[in-house]
Image (cartoon, rainbow, N blue to C red):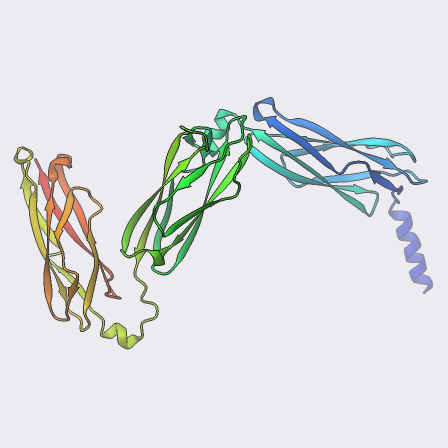
Length: 358
């Protein structure tokens, strides 16, 4: 027991005590309001009073972000004194509304949290980097949202940020005619320098065709007549879902093959001008009925003119198409035709259309 008391006394001598007063904050929040990025850092302050009988010392402060600096007196705060706790926010490269916190330590144990907020009206340089798409009073973070491969039945959620670069409040809206893509907004009215988030929700069950898809969405920058519009494009590559099939069902499923899977059209003379026809067969070498969901080409030069929809087991059917090579550049070309079907092992087959344009 005696040893414990001696140890406590020794530690008390080695660790100097920091005087504690009773601190009352006259403000714990500060709003910078609308500030211009080009004006540079801006400083604000709050006040605190030592209402206790002893001196108090601010021993440290920790901002939540490196964009915020702090300044406070190093000297002890005498009983009854009022001092300022200052902070500086650097808006460089940070357009839009912000909210930060600062933890302030008094003496050994006391802590207070100061909250600062504001709204930064960005410079053209910052906006062109963070919101490169110009849409009248509204700037957008991107113009294309690519979901990549999506299995049928799944959903995808994407976000698009917009920034009001004007000194007026705007009310953006949107138009999407596709039931598989819904859009919502984080705010109906967007104040000067404010950021609005547009939420895009894609439900693949609302689609009937597999393969690549593009859904345009018109973003209308404001409710005022004649407000500029910008088209944003949502893209995805939709594939069938075979996850619920049993091994027996997979074994008895259709098997898709294309013959030939490479169509060589030889040398095509530009002066001929007329589209060139081609054909190939799709064979079902499986047992179950094969359903062709889609046959298409990502090249606008190819048009499918005849296609099967159902092929029984052990049977084949022909597909026909046209190549309008007038839009192709001179030289060799290699264009792809894609077949989407219910073959769980090969849901997508590819046929190449090759040749040389002179």
